[in-house]
Image: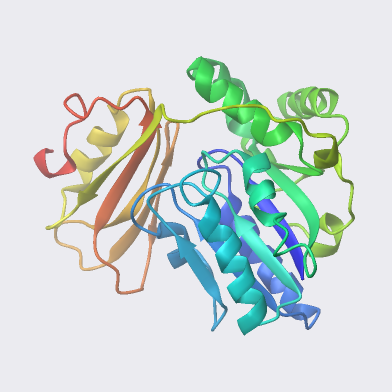
Length: 297
């Protein structure tokens, strides 16, 4: 049973990448199973996976690199016994330490029947230079997320001018020169490209990065919001709010929408599944008293 671990900070495109990989793996007539870790208490990313009866194991309200570490070992064992898939894709939360996730997969009980195929990091090219505006702890976390990856996907290359893109990509190649680097739009890449093993992570030490500074705030949205007020609320969020995602409806419109916000970029897309309305905010040392509830906008 091959394991692919997918890591990357909030909003880089991990779930979109997962959907492309699932489709490509199935075209090769291989069985795939999924483990998705959400740092918050709701499993938004699992709702976005194009599952079609796919085995999906959801882990919420914690991180598989610390509080849920034992759970991922148990889930991998159960997946093997129940489904015996060829491949398991593990999508880490945006604040996970990948080496700890790797460690959870390498326990004695799992080692006889699993192979770590790839440790994949994904970067949002358009946000690469914004990293310097984050807290020191968050910057260290982002560096560790990529440091030991066997493959790095530079995503959203279409969002920068070509000259700036080329310069930034070269900076990334120079900094992470032991990894295979791929450039993508919308996370489009073939499974076989990422299955070529290059075990950078085998050189890993034990960087100790804690992410207790990362917090999330959950809001159940009980009525439709005014769209102009909502966009104003998003625009004026504190700079230490890195990610907002969830599902809402707007006044005078029965359509449900998927909300995804990352560092100043807001996406509002129609969503047709029957899911409760809620928003999750993820950020650095969130002062809940300073973040206005969306109900008050």
